Each structure stands twice: as structure tokens, then as C-alpha cells.
Length: 584
Image 1 (cartoon, rainbow, N blue to C red):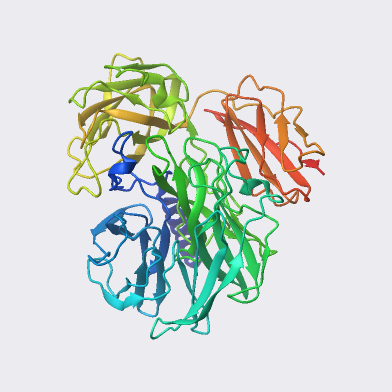
Image 2 (spheres, rainbow, N blue to C red):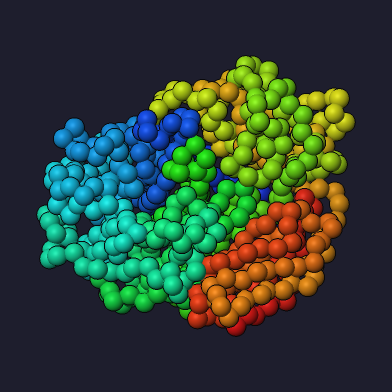
């Protein structure tokens, strides 16, 4: 009897600990909340100074994650992929002619106990750097004059110890590959042509916001290589970093220098809809639990084409070796891994946007930067107060009393004064909640914050009940108090939408790369998520659509059949998906 009781007590304890661990699982929300530097280029700041970065790499090294991206005058490291530490560092030497760039589109590589990094250059005088302790500025030259001269490089070490570099960024030239000596870092043999675009076949590779502008040839760039079960996955970004359809594609081969075959499921990283769009020029890596992720560039491109941010998504290889990433609801809160998991299953928390296009009141408005721009689920538009003064505020009405789990605050750069990397800057604010719009209590207090948090994401320790949310500014690092998104996440008290009816996909014979999707409007829907793929069991890509019952999709391969499903969502949840629709 005692043995049975002891067993039951141990079982209850294990179950309680398991439930506790599940409750404490960390969440994140794209774009990532990094202290992004501002553009260092005066020519890029003519329409306003602004934060900017892109072209990220993520590397797991000695149990920590290292994130490098374009022109940040340093890099970040993290223990958990949520809380990031910035290390200030200038890698470009005075004799390097890079016209203001500081590690543009960098490449990283782990060799044994050493982390290597290099930026983009067409010259042969760039330094390849190395560190065994990159949590601080502790670097030395692995190669003073790296002779490959690669733009948008990606480096790869094979299981046999041989090292390769891939590179290229052009709308006329292909990507190239080359072996380099592991010990001397000298090139071995000439560079070889690897892959190139074929927009006449692949609709998503066409230039343009909706893959519809053929006045300019598409760009291929951003090389990255992974090896999985003996196959080599050469990844690339296309067709242009400024567009919402910017994604990453992949070729697969049996040798690190090819030949490569175009994966039918392409792009494998794609996010053309939602608050922040774009998922191109990135890196695929495995976390400390062996789960794959894909990090990539997200666009704003308002003050300059190269005004961009960073996001990452669950990724992996399916049972057929198909590389995919899951970007559905990709700028809503998601769970981080706390152990091995199947990324074909969603990491989405289920917390919905509660204040999309809901009523807003503000303390003041600067010109045409209207209040509702802060709740329209579009990072390109923003509200700005007339000043950065303490006490400027924005209040959003959720429409009904709801359960609030998290808030994301996306600051916009209005009249910013910084160029390049600025240290010691910070934001301060308080967020209040109310049930009736009259009695308020603080739910998030950042009055003593001294961190730079341009995309601050806060999961509440205890979910709150409220109808109204009010953010009061206390301190801005520069410029006006301006928000591209005060985003409130949780669950409403009403019903989720019914299943969408009458999904129609029209694909003509004259242009088989395009399709027109239509469906019956759902009166209870905030928006819709359309899933698509090249097989009924591989609907890995998706488009998020707000407030419309149609979508023009121009990203198909000319010669492949496609499969589509759709679901509706609102602040209360997500409907069941429709049956799969096939178009030949």
C-alpha cells in the first residue's frame, strides 16, 4: 500500500511539474524586439532617419545563439532566443573600401571551438574574423586578407571537414560556390556557377510588390546552406527585399557544389500578408533541442527601400526531405521551444489580435499620421503625436471585455535624429487597462526601463480582463511619440467565425503563374488565412488577409497543380478550415 501511495505521489508531482513547465513556456512575437541601429547612410535618410537592418544569420555556438545582421556595428547573443544582449564591435578595418557598410549581409561559420564571421565585399582585402568567446568583444583575424571577395556570402562546413562559401547578389548573375581551405582559408579552384532564377516558370520569383512588375529583373541573393540526411539544401532570397513577397527558396543536391535541383515546394519561407510582411534572405539553423528555425528579413520600406526588420519562424524537413517554414500567424505570439518538437504542428499560442481597426483616442495627432494607423495591422502606416513629451497617450477600445495575454508596442521613426548605432537610448511608458473607460490600473510599467525596445513585446504574468487599453509615453529616445502598432493579444468573449463558404480559385490558361481567389464574406471574421501548396498534405505556405474576401496570388509555378484551403479568424479564435481545393 505504501508503495502504491508513493508511486501516486511521484506521478502527481511529475504531472504538476510538467504542467508548470508548460505554463512557463516562453513566447515571442515578430518583428523581433532588438535594439536595431539606424541607417548609417545620409543618402538613405533623405525621407527621414530610421532604424534599418536585414540579412540575418543565426548560429548556435557553445550553447548560445548569435545573431548578426547588416550594418549594426556589432551583434547580439542570447541564451533563450528571447532576451538579447548587444555587443558593440566594428569589424571593418580603415583600409577596407566599403562606402560606409559595416558587415553588410554577414556570414558566420562554426569550426570546432571557433566562431567565424565576415561581411560582404567584392574586394580581396577583407578580414575574416574569429572568436572563441564572442559573448564579449574578443576577436582576432583568422585571415587578414580573405581573397574570395564575396557579396551576400554564406559559409558551410561539411561533415568531412571541407569548407565552402556561396555568394552573389544580382538580377543578372547566378549564385556562385567555391571550396576554401579549412586551415589557410585560401580559395581552392575557381568559383562555380550554382543556381539562378527562372521567373518565367516560378511566379514568386518575379519582381514587384505582388510579383506583377516586370519592368525590372528579379534579384537572387542571400546564400545559405544546410545538410540534412545526406542532402545539401542551397537556399537563396528573391525577388527583391522591398516587396511583401520577398521569400527564400531552395535547391537540393547530393554534393555541396551541385548539381542542384529546384525543390517543388518553393518558396519555403514566405510571408506576404499580416502586420509585417516578407520572409527572405535569412538562415536556417537548429536550436539546442535539435528543432529547426528560419530567420529572415521583414520589410517596412517607407522611409527607404532598405528600411527593414528581422523575424524568425519554426522550420524543418518533412518525411520526404522537403524543407519548409511555418509563417502562418507569424507576427502573432508564438511559443519558443522547451524541448524537441514537431514544427509541422503550429507553435501559435492562439492569442488573437483584439484591437484591429477598433476605436482609438489620442492626446494629439501630427498632420496626416492618423490615430487608427496604430491599429490597422500594417507596419507601413503609423500614428504620430505632435511631440515626444511625457504624457502623450493613445487609448484603444477592444469593443468588449476581453482576456489580455500580451501586448506588442511597435514604435515608428518620426523625426528621429540618430544615424548608425546609438548606445544608451531607451523607451519608458506605462500601459493601463480599464473595464469601463473610467477606472484605470497599470498592467505594464516600464517607467524605469533603460533598454532600447523598438518592438517591445510583453507577455503578462497573469492574463488581465479589460475593455480599454491606454499607453502613456514617459520617454522617447529620439523623434516624436509614434506607433505603427499598439497590438493587444488574447481572447474575446464572443464566438469564433464559422467555416468559410464557397472558396473559388480561378486559374486561367493564359497566365498559369497567377490565380484569383474569392470566397463568400464571413460576417463575423476579422480576416482570413489562405493555405496553399503543391500537394494536399503539404500546404506549408499561407497568406493572411484582413477585411477582404479576395486575393490575387501570383506566386505559382507554371507547370504544377496547386492546392488551397482557407480559414476565418477574429478576436475570439479561428474557424475550421475548408476542404482542400485543387487547381490544375
